[in-house]
Length: 519
Image (cartoon, rainbow, N blue to C red; front, side, top):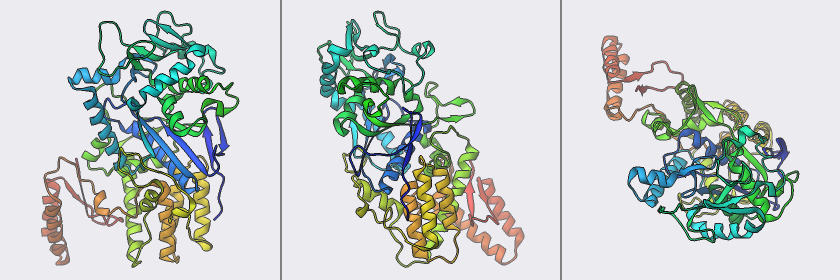
């Protein structure tokens, strides 16, 4: 198997670049995590599927991976453009709950979605509130040269660093108009490093600082956590495309100030060598939003009977930098494709007395297999990955593995990688063990858990359904007997009985699927 050079699109340079690690043989990655004031919607989760594929690809390529995802439990305002109330404080007031309870509840909900989507555990979940003393120290170190104080807090002067806003490519008045207007700011784009608690108010989360009692700015948190854990400069910083416009430029400005670096013609001066952003998930009515109080959650998909990995498949079928339109029809098509793969892999496994480790087993071996919320090691070397690197050599399979490697090495082109996977599934006259080992290696990158899934898990069965699977199977068994006896009247009656309870019996389905439940 050849080893194609890994090329990634760097948002800072707007170009495809060959990955060159800061530390030979290592890959250090930081991903902007959720603000845990509400449930994540499926558009939010696309960012973590993308970051997971990136991490899996780095592991597949043999790098020792350290991946960090932060949990923002303080400081993020209701407007991503640095304006409004603190999202956490606002939700705590609305719910009449402790802000700590709000954070704990929605963090657990986010971790449940992470698990459901087969997203590997990072080396560390960095919790913002645990780093507040470090944030104050960071702010103190840059305050004299880069900041100024107003009644509302400490502000960063963007004119003190070179090339501010280069990442966004949007240094316009329209862009600056999205920033909070605060009397006394030197520049429209200046942003808060520390927010003082207004006189007469008290936050549930506030700390003493040289600039008064208050809370850190949202942008400060990621600079501090990424730098403390991974060290500046680290390899890759990921996030949604919305972060490219304000949040990440502000992070970069802070990093430049802290590291005393110059212009962004040299990417490492930004704090990370590569900045990567996934595009939006959209629906026909436009970009999804939580503002209405009703939005698409992963749990809604599950409640309607869709396996969560159908959504992961949907994400993988599009390039991470392209917009992905969500529709129920598209989700159903992704589920059908997933079913076909699971059936084919299952048939292959039946031919082997001792199947090789699944893609998920191999993936877990790379990250320590820790539980959500734990600080776990994601260190990975070529020698400890039985599926990712110990691949079949020679013959027809190796050529397909070369093509798969080339696809994921081409800026994570999972759409092409899935096509190669399908082609390997369809291969005839190939040793079953060799074939399954190759599929397991591919799935270690795709993360679909294809060697672990059972076809019955993928049946459409909405939460609202009252009929049990045992009852469905019993009627289907009676119907099979009737059809075998050529009693077609009884067969049709039993089919109608199931249809009346929302069960569709799919005779002649090429997948061999026997039934599904409608909404």
